Image (cartoon, rainbow, N blue to C red; front, side, top):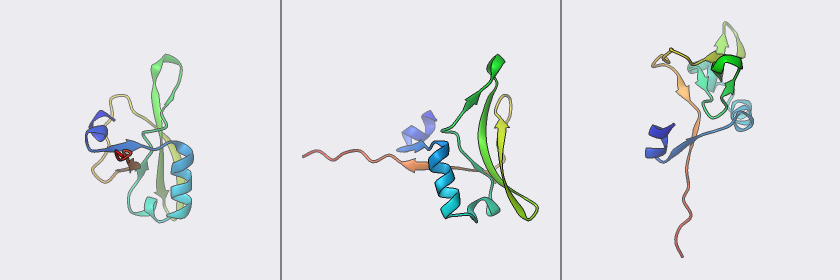
Length: 88
């Protein structure tokens, strides 16, 4: 997330991600789409993030465990460009 901020980007939450996927339903057919702006922590500190992806001919929403895992190069992260207010 810190690296995204350096690029002027910020992660989106699950609601915005769901709206995006609804409007661009083919996005998850080309690449899995990870929503790092909506982490879910369970007992013991394990962190999961939503992951939209294709499963055969259908589309799915998974929770992906982050601990000790790396994402494949084919994964896309759903982010938005941070717009800074311009000075008067």
